[in-house]
Image (cartoon, rainbow, N blue to C red; front, side):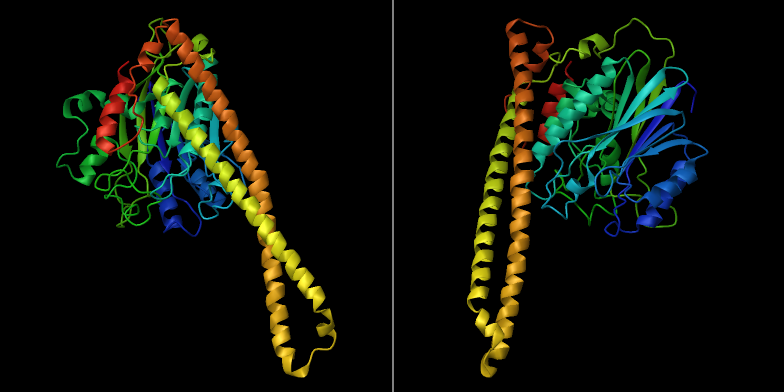
Length: 474
């Protein structure tokens, strides 16, 4: 790797304790692979076990001597950043909405999902702030967490803008659980003004060959379309899908390296990495493939302006090229979720009332038959004891249900509903700003008005072709 180049790699390691198959074997293989490669910055997701991180850290310390593991929630964030250059500061931003407490087997609520960042002191261009995140997964055919993922992307976009407004070089990586036609992708591109490294590196080829997989094999589609998850070529995603892929024959592009394109840092190449089997085995490193990007570093900033806005422009909250039609669609989505959240909270509180009434009824019934406790008849003693045991068990269950319902329904239900209300107000301000600028004929708004008025998604490739073209026309 040239001293004027910067290599960045991101990987979802699938390091879930007990659930992830061959976890220790795979994590050690990942550590071995990274120790033999020449990356400058590596970001990891789903590295849940501290012992796995400590092993990986010790294995790569000769090439990546600086690292940080991020702690959050009851089970940990699963995020880590490793660097060849000194890490001078770190931070962790926990997303406001990230899962629900009753969805125990989803687990997102209990890991405290958020965005990890590290300010890395590069010898030529100074501070590079590197972000890594793992947005909420979809889980199943019906994506009930799309609203959560949009709010996470909104918060992340504002973090990226704030960093860029300070004049820093910004790189954002991770498993975004979002395809390129999603609202989340649009937020990162058109509101945070980030550049998709893989798309930039392959835009010329894609303009000639298109996005149709044609007769390409799953392995060929990985590099042709940037597929990182749910690929038929991955030995794990064939059996352990968290959510239905948008194209079962191809897979999805969910992992990205975004960056703020400036005169000092530009992407010169990007590939989907770690697609081979672990040496000596017939299994992949993870249920995701890695993404690697190479950046050209220019130590002398020039006055030639790239497509990225200036730090002064980014400090203005109303400055955006986010399409008005998509912003309005996001509002519709959040309002729908707000109504659904309110209904769910109401149902839980109703169930709390039913459980409480049942509990009171059983208590009264127990007191009413108290004399039988003192002198039960011989012939009915066994029946009475069994009945008392069953009654006590129902009382305990009713008490537990009542407690859970009042906590989740009242505390979390109202918290989620109010959080959605806050996000709705923020997006409403953005929409009002876009409309006002449109009326005043602000030049950057013309880009946002080119977006399609139909935000619904149909097929993977038709949607990918259409909205990717719209998002990248500028």
